[in-house]
Structure formats: C-alpha cells, structure tokens
Amino acid sequence: MARTVNPIQDRARRSALEKAAYLALYERGYAGVTLANIAEHAGVSRGTLVYHFGSRAGLLSAVMRRFTRTITVATRRALRQADTPSAKLQAFVDNQFYGVQNTRRFYTVSLDFLAAATRDPELMAVQRDFLGQTLELDLELARLAGEDGALMRARQLRALVEGLSVRFLADPEPDLTAYRADCLGGLRAILNWN
Image 1: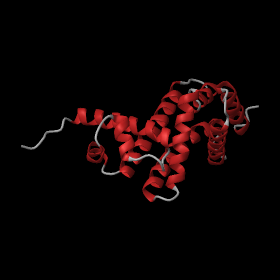
Image 2: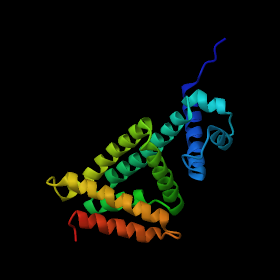
Image 3: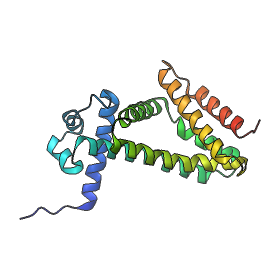
C-alpha cells in the first residue's frame, strides 16, 4: 500500500529540516557541511533529507531561498508598516541588523553561499533571485528621493548594506547600535537627506 503524505505535515517537516541545515551551514560552512552533518543536526537519517530535497545542493538551495525570502518578506512588511520616509529608513536598517547573533549567522551563511555560487549555476540562480528581491526593496527606498537616479541610488544602498555586513562579520565585538547608526547615516547621505 502506498504511503499517503499529509501536505501540511510535509511542509512542517521540510521547514524543520531547512532550519537544521541553516544551523549546520553556520557551524561548518558551505564547503564543510555534509548531508550527514545536517541529518545529525535535524535528528533524522540522510535518506530523509534526500527524500525531501533530492541532494545536498537541493537542500542548501532550499535553505538559502527560505532564509533570503524570510529576510525580504520581513523587510517588506516593516516598510509597509512605516508611515513616514524616515520611519521606512529606520525599519529597513533594523531589518538589516536585527540582533548580533542573528545578523552574524545570516551574513556568515550568506557570504559563504555566495562564494560557493560563483562556481555553481544552480546556486547562482538562487543568489540572482535574492538580488532581484532586494533590488525591489532598495528601489522603494531609493525612490523616496525621487524617480530620477533611483536605480543608481538603489545599487548604492545595497553596496552600503553589504559593505557594512562584511565589516560586521570581521568585528570581534560588533556594536549593533553603531552599525545601525552607520547604515542609517549612509542611507541618508545616499538619499541626500542631510
């Protein structure tokens, strides 16, 4: 008799597996993590991972899609809830630097994934999708200073965030308040809101 799959339980199981894989990625790095490591983190067999994701690459692509989507959805929601241009900027900054450990974990995994994506077309497709999502958010902020030159400002906004994220990772004792202030000040300068 064929096994029936409950779609809700299946989604919940995949979600839990993706979370475990994300933590394993953070601890071991993209190049160092194996399906066995992830299975151990999740408390399941390697076969369970293969069943749900097909391969290590399939699992890690799903992990990055999930967590980049989570970031963009949370940022988009925060921007919608902000009622003034200044509040939108603050909401954006708060979502880029949202706690020392969470920010460190996300940017560590993200940069490690990007390095691997330079050699893997499937992973690069995930990275390009994320860049497309962030460009929409960046353009929304850039347009606060007008439509003219918005694309250039959007690219500058992203470069600022990515540059600060690398500094954040290299900082042995990052001061979240200082990074948020630097990011907000940089965004205001790019938008010419001195």
